[in-house]
Length: 101
Image 1 (cartoon, rainbow, N blue to C red):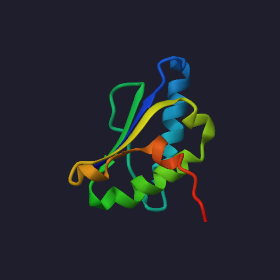
Image 2 (image 1 turned 90 degrees about the vertical axis):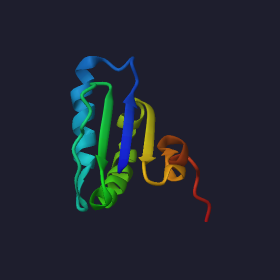
Image 3 (image 1 turned 30 degrees about the horizontal axis):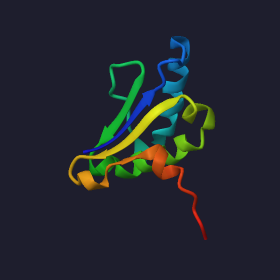
Image 4 (image 1 turned 90 degrees about the horizontal axis):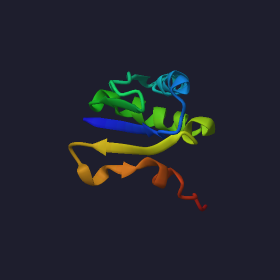
């Protein structure tokens, strides 16, 4: 099982949460498939799936990373690989590493 767990900052107003969830849901509905938010907590978004959802989850992560207004509201964002825990990471930290060519 793979998971994207996104924790929204507590200072984000409740009325903004639906908009943020919609942005994330659109990112995880992409050409590789669709993965829905399974969290029942408004300040947390969880998109998860098995091998069939791997591409969708990765493409969704990239799509969402481009939404800087969304990312500014994120407290933490974790990629969790339950079968290979060493592959789990802090998405914000990893995506912030500059690519040097």
